[in-house]
Image (cartoon, rainbow, N blue to C red; front, side):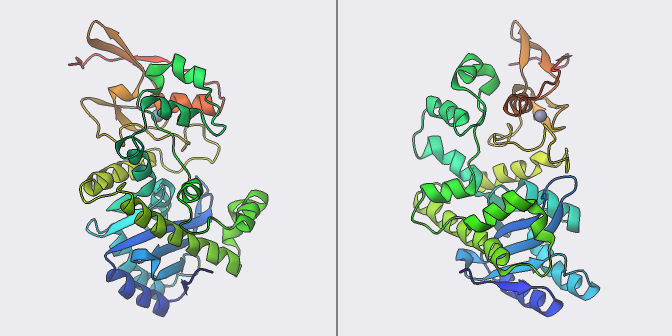
Length: 333
Ligand SMILES: [Zn+2]
């Protein structure tokens, strides 16, 4: 069972803020109803110290008094401090939800989901064919022949891996997610996080996510997936990842251009040259993130939606018009 401190009043928050402030880095994960969606409600903000030695489960719904919020401000200041590193797994929705609830933009994030992707080629020596096999795997509705026939569309696009799958691959790190809670999610949806009092099983589940992220961080370091040499670059990538849904904001859960199981472009590499908006995800991206049409070496047109948004249409099997937009101010080099 996970050890954690449940923080639902000002004194427990004040104590948590003191302990968290002395940790060399923080581990963060949130729970709630439809986190990151238009009707999202943050329920629990879980924050751990290094190695998940201390885990604090902040009950966002209970911490609404002026006194509690003034103590929580000390914790939120840590979240906004770019010099305090935050270890997370898929930070995108938690980033949106914390911003929506507290008006605080997380800084200094190191997202392990990106470290896993980085390691595929750089440490594990995976070749190009393996990238396409990963994209086609696990019922993503992207048949391998389709990927092979459209190399430009899928160029540089990576599949995302879930935390539970990564834990299972890295066995015997720690136990995965509690299957009973996973089943409760399937049956009752994420509304279960708004019930009070929360079932102890749910609190344990939330705290155990911090243990899993902490164990994965240590594992990734032991495998040299994260080293002092690549850590700063991973933080830069993670912050681009955190902001990747920011311009779109919280959208309906079934929005075709919401988050998907593929990594957005311009995350692993920083944007280059002219950036233009995608009419799907609303994100400004480099021209190479779109399907482009050239005359000679000159780019003359690009699609109105980015390549990853086109891939979302394929994955979600949605018919949506894709049109060309003239590019007049840019000469490719
Ligand atoms: Zn897009």
